[in-house]
Image (cartoon, rainbow, N blue to C red):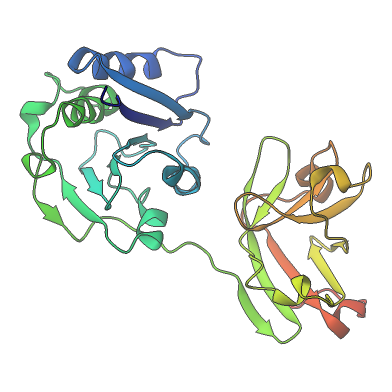
Length: 278
């Protein structure tokens, strides 16, 4: 028995209104034999980077041929383009606003098409709900086997932004930023073990993580290893260093959010009382 086509949905619509359910209805009306997975509907409102991050952390854990639908679309009703992108294993239906940026960084092959075949859209097309009238029907027809080239021509000028990277300021200082604060208040930085290998050697160097002039000096291997009220670092499932506190919000303790600078001092610098300089 052939496997059902899988579609994931990521939006900033939340669950209080009818929007998500209506989009599912549009897809199912075109193809009732589809499995729709709610990936996340709590993307920060209008936050394209947050949508791009959630998508990039999730897409490859689904079976090949999964279609990922993302509607985080503050430019709805403007001249921003609807896009259909595909890698060797996945398809993405998204607005042209940069939400594909982190996929483009990770995937060696990414073909992007401007969806212009408006006979696949619902009619009339609302100026305020392209999730229903443009993106969902495109997904529906994709699940019915319509080939990607039927929707529009390949483009290369789609919107992209560069994700912030940690940088090695000196032998003893790495600087990064906070990418995201999750529901539990855990702080996800853009610093990976590869950026600070000294912390993961057989004889780890002393270190000090500084955020808003507060310090973290302990690295744990699980959340449960942290003592109550203790701030500690951990390598999370994202592959980045996280700053956490056991059963509390590290973000609130540190008064820190996305974009806040993070400094990691290593070796002799870790014993210096001064915070890292910009």
